[in-house]
Every structure is written in structure tokens, then in C-alpha cells.
Length: 381
Image 1 (tube, rainbow, N blue to C red):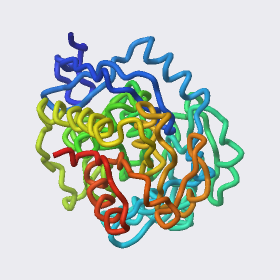
Image 2: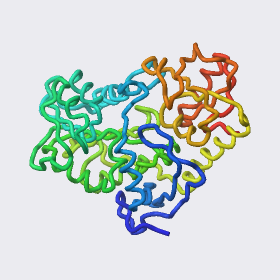
Image 3: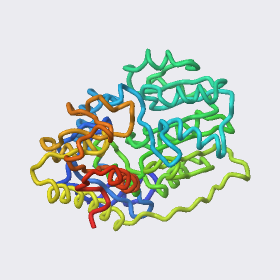
């Protein structure tokens, strides 16, 4: 079974079908979801897409109707923990952009898929002369966005004026939700001035197979497929990284780059074997949980996507969550308490349901604190 055309590389074969069942799903706002389904893998560029039919659209309608952004942190963006300490995701992204190719310090910036304004707040603090515009698909956060210093306007996507011109556009964890990514990027490119900048961040399915089971993600990107997609709309890549924020792809493109821009960045194309290995990691982790915990209660490290996905499979056994983010500690997630590592009961074992690149580091930290760890994504052997 095949789809028609890959929107990233234009291949006539949209992709070979892969069934994620019996793995269950999760929503992008961190709620368990009772099913997964078919995905399609493009062997030419490595792009993966969901089966974008009416059933999937109805799922998305239900998910977005009750969407809660960062509910486990009282609406505050999650922190990213690296060797240099913890920092909110938007702040870490913008810091890397500014330390690299950089952005203009004046003009206008449009944040498409601005959510509750996490990036806009950071942008005003770092680049206070920029005039900011937030765009979302509905107006539920309109008053919140308009109250952010530096914001000139909030616009619902359907009312976006295609004649407006901006120096900077950002798409942070938005592109993966869109059914027509090439058309969206073409439209954004037309909104940029002749020397405009585009900053994108999306999940990296190669580093993080958990992205595959997020039900409302229409597409799952690799560095290679995202590079193909930008080439389709005539933007030149200045920087493309998957280590600025672990398990995320961060891309900085320009409309008319100078000779310092590297237009021919090449990344290894993920293979069908990479996909089956990723699915195998998730299936192996679920089996490891059954083997390690049986019917006994256990903690889950984290309180985001991976934790909610594990709750889809083991809801009754999960007794609580362990999180290093002080903003979340002492709160609840899925009606269970979020503990700090220091306050958690050492007699209860832990499952670490995170991207493998992150899970390995957390495993070492928790083991050094004396926890019994029963299951870790990517450490099944």
C-alpha cells in the first residue's frame, strides 16, 4: 500500500506502509491515546507520514479541542537538561542560533504556531528591538500573546496576510502537525524579505522513535528529509543540527544567503532498517516493562511524551512520576504526583521512557542516586 507523492523530496512513491500496532499512541500535549496505526516511509529521503485520512483528522480534531499546553508545568515550557545545566527549550534554541549564524536585531518576527508564547517571550528578552507577531490556528491564547512585551499582533492562521513582510519567521514544533508542509513553507518564504531568516525545530524520529507514536503528528522528520523539503521552496540552509537540543532537529535557513552559507549540507539518509529498529526499540521497552515489573507498581521518570505514552500501556501500575524540573515537582500529572529524585521512594523501581540519547544519561544519574531501574528505552540488551 502506498501514498501518492512524498512532499519532501517529490518522489512518486509516497512511502511503504508500516503498521505500528500493537503499540498504543500518545498526544502531543502528553495524554495517553488508545491506538496507533499506519505510517508511510519514503525510502528516497527518509520522511515518514501518517495515513492522512478522515479518521486521522477526526482524531486530531478531538485532540486539539481539549489541548492543554504544558499542563504539568502550569503552562511553563519544559526545561532541557544538558551538561551546562537546565534551560527552557526556546531559550536554548535561540541562544544557539545567535551564537551561530545569528539573526537581525531589528525589524519584525513572526512565530507561526506560537502556542502560549514561550519563544516570543525569549525573543523579546534577547532581541528587544524586534516587532513580534504570534500566529495560531485558534484564538484561545490571544490575550496571553498580546500581553507579551514586544508583541505587535496576534493573528489566527486563516487570517494571515500574505502581503506582510518579515525579517524572521519561526516554526517551533509546528511543522510536524501540518498536512501540507511544502505549501506552508512556500507561503512562509513569500512572507520573508529578500534577506529573511527562517528558524525551524521539529522532533527527530531517528534519535527519538517515540515521535512515531504521537498521534497528531502528521509527519516525522529526519535531518535528510527536512533538508530536501527546504530545497523544494528555495531556502538555503545556514545551520542544521540535532544536538542543539537533544532529540530535536534545529534548522536555520535564509532566503538569499551569502557565501558563508553552506547550501550542500549532506546527512545520511535513514533507511527502512532504521525505522524497523526504532519500532523494535519501543516494542522491546514495553516487553522489558512487563518482564521487570509484572503487575507491581513502578515510577516513570519524566512527565512528558514518553511518560504519557507508557501510561497508555501501564496506566494502573504507574504510581507516580520523577522529574528533575523544579517547576513540575510537587504538581500532578495524569492524576499522580510528580516527585523530585530526592523525595521519591527508593523502594519503588523506575522505568525511563525517554529518547534513547537522553535515557542513557538519566539512567546513569538515577542509578548513582540508588534507584532500582527496571526498564530503559534503548537499553534492552
